Amino acid sequence: MLARGLKKFICRLIALALIVCIIAAVFYGYKGYEMYKEAVSKTPISSIAEDICSREHFTEYESLPQIYIDAVIAAEDKRFFRHKGIDPLAIARAAFNDIVARAFVEGGSTIPQQLAKNELFTQDKKIERKFADAFGAFAIEKQYSKKQIFEMYVNSIYFGSGYYGIYDAAMGYFGKTPAQLDDYEAVMLAGLPNAPSNYSPDSNMQLAEKRMSVVLKRMVKCHKITEDEAEEIRSKSPYYSRSSPAAFDDVDKK
Image 1 (tube, rainbow, N blue to C red):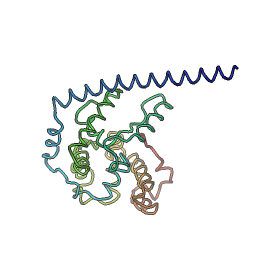
Image 2: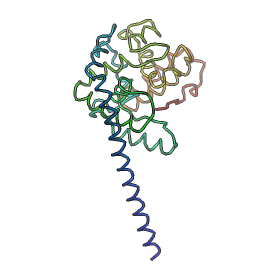
Image 3: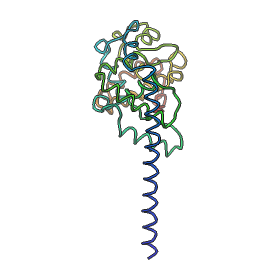
Image 4: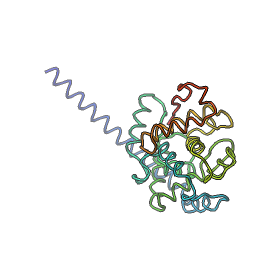
């Protein structure tokens, strides 16, 4: 009898929790939609795209090294070519990790969401802004192809040390155009936007290489390169020969 009563109590508690979650989702979803509508009324997405694409040294998708494209997708949004703006699996994983950590430790944002956040909204970690990002991502996906979205993303994101966009970052850090980057340089640049001020090679090359190692691991996991290829890229580090494997431990914050 006691067990039956306890079971009913637990079921009611779960039902109540679900109701609260649904109400919260509706509430913050509405606030996020209002935030999105206000943002695009001031700055339409088409205007943002036109501004990015008209910038000096805008680099087209076909001019980017394939390994750079693979590295960015592995690091930031591995299902980029399959989702429609948001990645429910990444969001669920991020939400679980945030709950366990009792803090915002993982984003779960796709490339379109990051593009919307960077161009339309502030960097405040608010629940309603997350919903606004999603609405922005859906709108971007409806208007532009995956290649166009990728171009806008890499030509506008911050790479640290005052460099915005892949061209300025490639020239600033390595004195090369994006098309001239070797594998080591391309993978390193792919990892910087996760925390550009921390990972900037100008500030801390060893920390930048630790982040690069994270990207390489993700590329191997996504079957973009082999373990041997990852090791060959990693061996180009000036620290490699005198560093233990621990020097490349995971420093991922995403």
